[in-house]
Image (cartoon, rainbow, N blue to C red; front, side, top):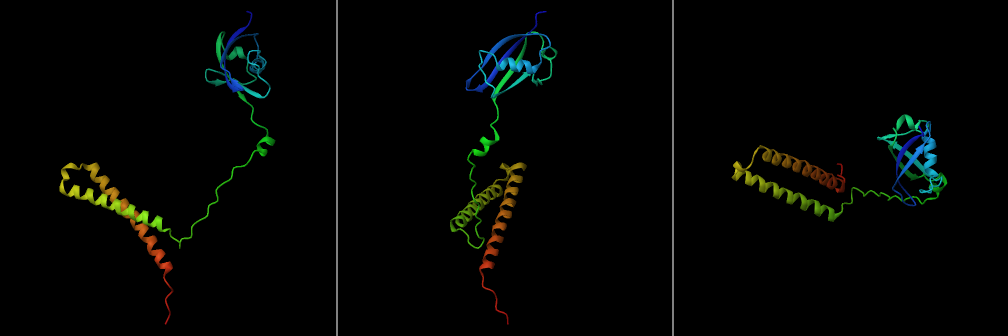
Length: 184
């Protein structure tokens, strides 16, 4: 036999987009490393040494020491992915570092009045909606199935838990602002 014929489908983004199919005839005993060198030096592709080449046959990455004829049949189709090599460490260090936002916590004794008003309005609107649904359930229970009643009870409990947490924060804030008692 003259050799092994392999179809190479080349993908990659090195410089400009290269998607091409090449037919290569390899002598028996050719390793994957030799096939990679052949792809790098192929005149149609004109790839340099600053690229990585990965060869894949039927979803499996071919390692450099494997013999091509053992893994790929005659006229087999091998996917060849070409990608640029990772940058050197010096280039990474020279790149500008991203600035992170500094977190400045708000003092608990200084509530924001706009936030307090929005939270209060949100809780009141949610309470009105819940009361409206409870009134609908009271007037026409036949329109509510088990899932609807369970959801209504769950949302009501959730509202009570969240409102009690806000009430506890309000009480603690008021207690912190109160003057200390005089001892007799």
